[in-house]
Length: 340
Image (tube, rainbow, N blue to C red; front, side, top):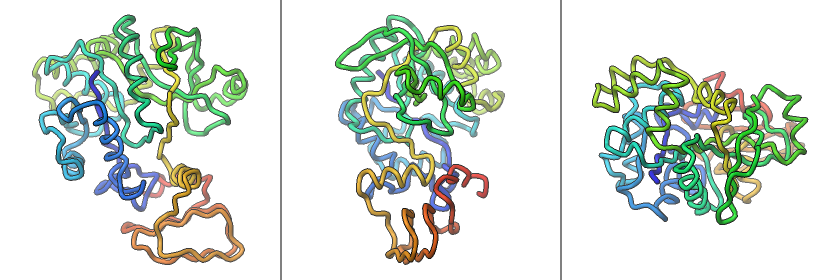
């Protein structure tokens, strides 16, 4: 199994701390460690540094190597420009193929997520590798929600395919878009609904074949890269797009599988998600003190550790950083990216 940490986004929903100069996955959000460092440390419990790959842009590669000096420079894949997850995932497969690893299973690690207990990801990898080699199907991950979660897509699990060390993998019976609220509500109590949590796993050759079938316009440049073509020129030929543009078709054809995550998965996409994690783990946000008058359940963070005062407001986020000050209702933190 080849672990590939993939990062390149900015995390604009976590402005004013997250910015192109210092994206959220490099910020010390959990104690004094960044999400990047925590994910690297997790992988190092099984893999030597020389077996871990990183895909990002040139600027973020420099930040990553300062935080984790043991990163092997030859294992860093550079995206020439931002094209979104579809082209980015294909590039990882093409570059692994280029170095002779086309028939080995690889596993994408999204860097802005936290997994607890982290070691359980290895159980997931072991099952994905076993079933992936046998079936050549696209494998992803999901978890059973206890409530409707906004802003995420869903999968409905079908028949059980395999179980190993308490981890289960299922056929994907159906993909449910985040906007299909009626269908989400209908399936919430069924025990079959899973939040789609990615964790792409497949061999590079199988993934590229999948691209060839469903996005030939992406496939041709990727194949050229895998055969030694100029990365910047070929990647530039690809249009931006999400991986779902391919995987939605794969799900509908019955060619995908989903592993129910054997760990608690937290996606730090908004300040509200960080606040929830802090509350559950009794972590106090960094600031210079908070004074509240007729105010409750507020999240206050100051990068410069200034004191924050709130009067007459409940359920708001106040974040002060080098790029500005955010004041927002918690339930609207998903829209912070609109103002950056």
